[in-house]
Image (tube, rainbow, N blue to C red; front, side):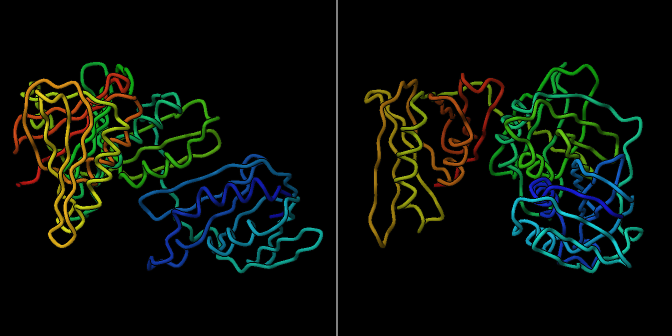
Amino acid sequence: MKLQVTQENLSKALGTVARVANTRNTLPILSNVLLRTVDNRLSISATNLDIAITHYIGSKIEKNGAITVPARLMQDFVSSLPDSVLNLELTDHKLNITTDKYQSSINGIVADDFPVMPAISGGSVWKLPAKDFKKALGQVVLAASGDDTRPVLTGVYFHSRGNEVVAVATDSYRLAENKLAKHKEPVNFLVPASAISDVLRIVSDTDKEVVITHDEQQVSFKVGDVMLVARLIEGNYPDYRKLIPTKFATVTRLKRADFINIAKVSSLFARESAGSITIKVDKAEKQVSINAVASQLGENTAKATAEVSGDGEVTLNSRYLIEALNAFLGEDIEFCFNGKLEPCILRSSSDTGYIHLIMPLRS
């Protein structure tokens, strides 16, 4: 292998894929990135066996070849170099990298030992504008569970409802659902939330679309010159629609910024009680108040003006509430509930198709 590539392009590609390389894995080669020449381009790949990312960059190739090198060292080294043209040449499993003033040699492992995710053949393909994909999935993925004891809850569930594709995630304490796009073919697959987070990091403001391809075992997301492939999570997703109320005894509408401010202030006093805050909606006063008590430190009540239908109060986890409010983009927010023990819903007319559910705490 012998080629030339710009430092900027190689550094960007390594930054995209290297985070997937796993230094703690029992297979040493999984802490490496694979460099391979493909059709007059250089492909840089990394995998942890569940997720694989490949970034293609333009290069001037004199001789084809492939090698794997340590991801962390390669990324740190290339990012430290000045903006210039790099010469890469493979000699006896050593990757020689030279510029005008720098010369290094990195020991590699033969590319034949690098695990490659099988290609998806004959799968369903659909597209989504990159901007819409990033917004919709960014609002959903935060609700996925990080607890591996229930694998299905660690994923984002893509499925059809009528002629629309819907994405949902839940950790059983909160739930986020968003409508993605209209699509004629039925969709039903479960993607690891970590893979979705990686895709969201890849999508930039200049990308036009995300191409999604899936079969019964894998899904791929192609964004510009980058492709991420992930193994699907096996298992049946819970029938979450039963949790979502359709009618509410108490509905309040207020400025999202006001709701965030009073929630943040109250959360400072809620640390002692595992983030517990009590939200009270007062129809007569036309306001929402949040109360938090810290027995050792004191207590706090913060209020905001609101449009109110019905009265009531409910106790929530302050972190879940703040994260949900930050996920919305509109100026106004609706907060709806049916008493102290039933699910609370947040929604906004500016975020069409998106709802966020939070389960109350027992007060």
